[in-house]
Image (cartoon, rainbow, N blue to C red; front, top):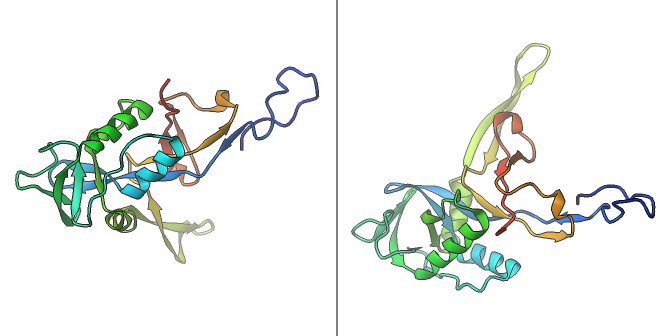
Length: 208
């Protein structure tokens, strides 16, 4: 929660107090994954879209591919093979034309701006998306240095999981503290490991 400590009664700005802006849990919407035909695709699933639709009140239909399919916006978009197969990481999936994907891409662009790579948006089965989130995220091995010697402490190698660049997440906001929000398009850091380039996000508060 963000805001100032409660001011004295009658002081200018007494509408700004602790809890003026309440930021909810960030929720994953789409994950960039490698593709043989278009460098990367922006992968999402029916459950992820349905959660956002419910929270934001969007009136959009949610695609529902089976576990062997991937839904794209066009009959033969750039990232679909002529044979109707999409290669995503180590999987080959049947390409299915679904115009509702284009509707979702348009809505996301309206809220996130032209910088979002929503032209690469595709929808896969929930199980495929779950696999992507656990098996295809970036894993970096770090170490802990012993200050007195300047070398790695014995047994102090550890792995840190990173969300790749272009990952889309959304957060629910409550309260009246809109002036406390970053400007649309502003880049800033969240969480730990910022010294190694992690936690950098671009904020979009939705259509102006």
